[in-house]
Length: 379
Image (tube, rainbow, N blue to C red):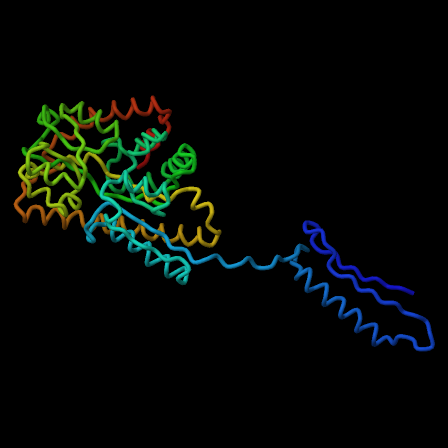
């Protein structure tokens, strides 16, 4: 009598796991029951080696995947001061991801050393020379994502709390999806960072849009911002961030706009055309923590989880540092002799009256009515 023991493996792999053949002959020397037990035990052990353990649902457990190779991420922003909130943010990312990954992911931080121009950083991200960058949203409008200019609209957000509610809610989630899809997966948002609230500073104080007529003002490149400042009567101009101190000092531009911490660290308030700071609070800013989408997709699930967790932590650190520094930076600017026009002494309604038509026009042109209304309805 012949007996064949066959243990079938995963049908997906379609291979025969184990075949054990032996013949039992009814002879004068019969095989004892004890020997038969031994044979079946060996067959079962061989089958287990090839098939693997069974899960409770009957499926076969797969052999563990090979451990991912150590990974080094390069993260960069365009500010050179280590006291800038961006610096605290990317340092926090490095600290957190190296800690939670047990050193399987390491991070190299660049504080303005890969370029002070955000366009340079974005180019390096796309070339693979940087893994993660911090950048203003405006550049995306020129690479096929016009919807991103919603972040550049002046007077869209009413306060820091309003900004956080919008960006951490459904509005922020849907905008991140739009950016990822419209960019062809070139850009994936890991976090929404803040550069505080932006104010005017220039060679003379202003209290209403009328005071800006004929003045040159350095702004960012977003088209909607140019529309707004033109509506105020100003002449928008472009100057690289690293060259703005000299431009203000030499009178190349009459004014600029930024938040207290950023222009204080660059000492713009000490220049001839940066002496008067007027709290227009026209932009509760959004900055993007970006990773190249296809690079992110190639990470293992574990690596993605580490990146996401570290990015969330870094975002919280950066925001908190931004809010903390806003008041201390203002105090430093005052101590240095700059003159302040308080928010309450500025005709904000007049500025908003010029901003809302720009918002509405942008929304209609880009099919963004739903999102503008979402922001306006958020408490």
